[in-house]
Length: 572
Image (cartoon, rainbow, N blue to C red; front, top):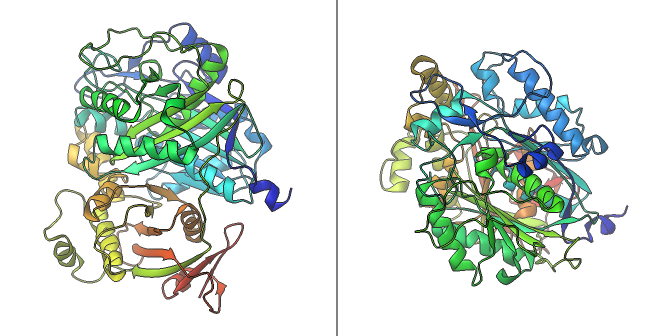
């Protein structure tokens, strides 16, 4: 197929799906389980102060319960096979997770060193030959992976990609959420009377994307990070996210038939999300949530809920509402399926002030795809600001000067990242990141010191400490930077072993306001630490310069970056 043929489709389609969750070990079983009214959650493992309910995946084969890795491999390979993954071993693989193999680390099966190594191990299980990316933005991870994968397909040269959401049981996540007092001891009650928190769950979900027409079209989507509340939702961010997703999809709000809400049972966030419904939609679409049936599956939730909901709609199955709704709220979950459900908006809200959504269309009901917004992509970028790659002496005092105060309780890793971002902005002669710019961060290891401290505390005391757990969540840094640079917009953490591939992907997704991108690694010695940031804006396409193949050393001194095909970069 020619390059023009590959890129002629403005929309991306779902060509295959796979799912393992509490409802079943396959997507077919999960839809059947939903039709039967669902399942009751088990009691979460671990030595916590209260028995919290937890939605677990039934084992797909008899394995030693202590062999966390063997179980994970079995579940993941089966789900990818169900989605048709054996047909595209050379395509990009986007793995979305907030915990990856934390359960194996807790059992001393592996050491915590480089979290991206677990993503690469999953690729080895699948015999994957294509590029591997790991997206980690807490609960919005798999929606953000879906958006990055779809943009990569639009820009070529690939025609298919796999998005894999992975969230499997571990004490680290359960204890951290319990320490934050976010969990219900009873049940998940989305928009429910007496709702008192979340119920977590396991899920592995695969979405195979294609440029070839299929029944379901991914019309568009959006991600908005807001620093207003680093642990909860922001009303203005939910509204901005939904409106941006509709804009890029080429759809009016009144064409959406169904909204899959986050609605996880949070007393405040459920009400906030309904306020956004009234702000964006003059006529309220049908409303549903899947959290009462599979739990909040964190980094896997976007892919898992899209797979389950689309398959259920095809089968004529609707999520039942088995708890009393809160009559003080302006809306409730619909007890019956809408008579027309051609277009749906799937919304996810997560830690780190991250809000993401995707807009999908059932071409079996509505055969005419919307005219998606055509975004002009820039191939030549000017490096307007740069910082790093090493932290200078006295950087903490310099950070306090940049902020006007010392940061409080965000952890050393986040402090270093914030210093690098602000230093890069200062070098670009900017005090605020303009609206429309995007923010990207890569960190293969993340905040290792805070994670190790949290794991040790759980091992000794059975419960995480709230601030230590927050500091171990890499997505928090996005909200911290957003607040510091007076900005709200598209931000995500995406990792690859190849830093140049990440820069290429970021520039492909950036618009006329450019990108702020950083590579941040925490280490126990200065030789292996890094904190390198670039601020890029579109350059005059007629600039005359001598270009050479990009290298990491070249990025530290170049003035221009030029994008080619297949992830190739030149610098001058």
